[in-house]
Length: 84
Image (cartoon, rainbow, N blue to C red):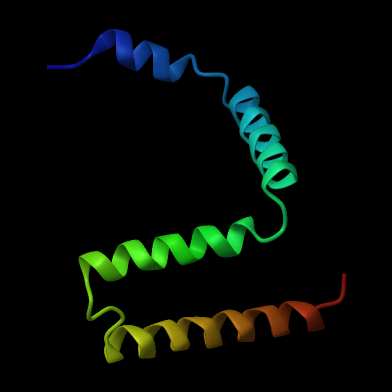
């Protein structure tokens, strides 16, 4: 069954205002929490996944992660060589 009211609400969402609110929220959060907050958050997320999957990351996941980083570096390097 379709939730018509929910669908109408979704369609009527002011996405521009929502994006601006989100930007303001994160700017204030970064000001309040300081520069180390992102590192602390990443450490907490890593600890959480390690509790759920003590074997994480596997050798395959490490290799795939490295390959992804190398592809991104390649794209960034190419973009830096492009004339504007």
